[in-house]
Image (cartoon, rainbow, N blue to C red; front, side, top):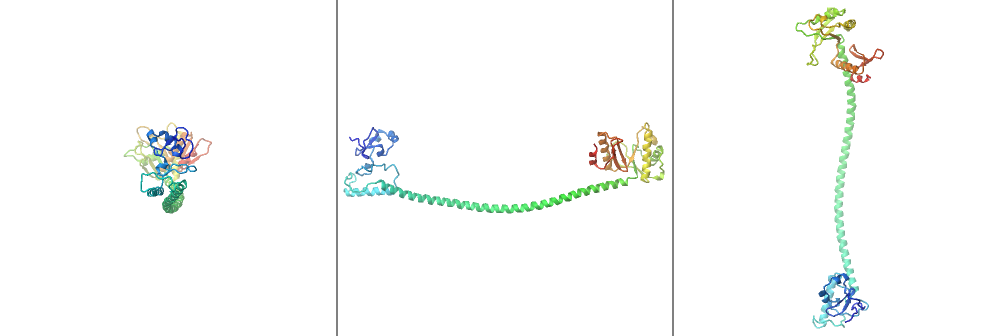
Length: 367
């Protein structure tokens, strides 16, 4: 047995070789087209039945000095190669008299499958595959770009619509801002006007009461005579008030119906001067009779002795303002809180300046 490779004519070293089961030729693993890993995985039966590439292609081995046998099964062969091999086999059978079992003669002049022919077939296959792939890629890209173009067109239309809507909304917002600005200005003007009108109305209401006195503490009685009570009060405090100086005397409704005190008595005098005369007389009497100030017993009303208070007739708003001023003055230790001609004044001590309380905000000026 020869230990020379039938493909490359080199000595076969070691046991890494295969022997053809038909022609008994020895091939190293490279010429046999088998890797070491594959060779080691082969079963002994597989190795003993192995056939060389020449026997598989039914072609004799010619001069292999320059061209060693390659593994023609390693790469997939296209239909052209199969057709070429089939045509070559038919030609050989015809020359040998149609015997399909006869081994081809070594002197056959048919061309073997060379590396150049295989390369040519592979190049042709590559060219065809490249063209097919290019066409497929071009079609896919065109389809994709067509879809993207449509999407971009739809997006552009949507963006245009949104832009128009935004411009319309912006214009509407600007108009609303202008309206809001005008309304704010008008509201500020109206607030000032309302404050001015409120102040004028309060002044007018207070002016209508300039000749009135409010008397609190007189018990209620169905048979009471308020005119006699007022004359008796004027006599007690020694005020120069006559019957014809008293225009009208009546009781008014309570602001708080749950208040248990008797209703206040309102006396309308002839003029603010007569009102001031009676007020001054009451203050003078209380000042000089500190232990026996004006009370119900002085008015000839029997029963429990109760104090009687005489003051200017204030509007409901001024009454609330006067009450808040007294509370604020008590918190800040103001000594004097008084009313003069319907106006409320406070003074912290004898040397400080008097402060007029015109509204609730004026209370913040008290420090």
